[in-house]
Structures are given as C-alpha cells and as structure tokens.
Image (cartoon, rainbow, N blue to C red; front, top):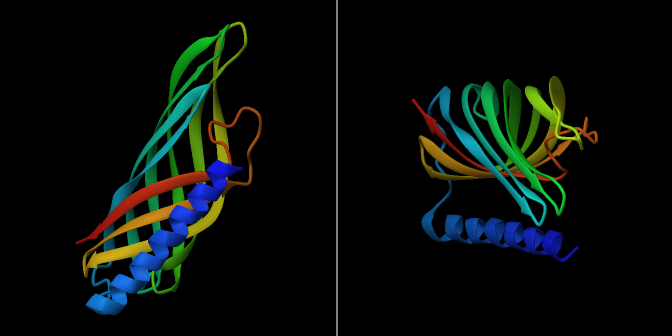
Length: 178
C-alpha cells in the first residue's frame, strides 16, 4: 500500500509542478506536427523479479487533440525465488490511440499482441500469443512545439495468471514531431 501511495504522491507532485511551471513560463505550446515518433519505457521491480519494457512508436495526429498510432514492444522478464530462477524475452506490437482531455492530461487505449514465453514450474517453456487490452491515462509535459515527455498509468483488462504485465503498469515516454 505504501508503494502505491508514493506513486500517487509523485504523480500529483509532477502534475502540480507542471501547472506551476506553465503559469511561470507561459502556456504549453501547440503541438505543430502531424507525425509523432518516439516511444516508451516501462520498468517494474520486486523481490521476485523484474520487468523491462522498451517500445518505439509512430503516431499520426488526426487533429490537435487525438493521436492514433502503432508501437512495437520488446519485454525482458525475470523471476527468482528460492527454488526457481529464469529470464525470458517477449516481443510484439499493437495499435494505440490517445486523446488530450485538458492541458496535457490524456486518456489512452491500446491493443497489443505479444509473443510470450510461458515458463512452467518444471522450467519447461512454451511460446504463446498473448492479447492485452490496456486502458488508462497520463500527463504530457510539452518542452517545445515539437516534443513532449509523458507519464502513463495503464491497466490490462485481459490480465491473467500468464500475463507478462501486472496491474497497474507505469510508463514513461517521449514523443517528437516531424
């Protein structure tokens, strides 16, 4: 519970800092580009393992508030306890859309297919195609008319015992327009 409280406090502080900086230094610029290139990074660590996600993306701005795009996914996953230790590499891609609700706050929906290696207790492995459907939102801080950094919190509505992601999932990303 204390980890979730810390994350909520950090997110709130980030949003408040962004609002104060916008008041001190002016409003955020209008994003000028139709094509957006960038990507995200997701990190998860615990006593029993780690989950690292790297995801380059390309998007198109349908209008100044609505982005539609595709992204590739590479995921490194490791697990360890007193009896078992393993790591695996997963890869895939999917489609996403995000909509700017108010001054950098946005909603995000994503559909992903991932080639996922399931590791059983006897350490036998089997590769499967896993479908994830993410919903959530986040905050974009524009640092120019052609670039931004974003922070997202996503929930996998298709989470199962074999899912490579645990809810909630946090992502930090960047976008650059051309």
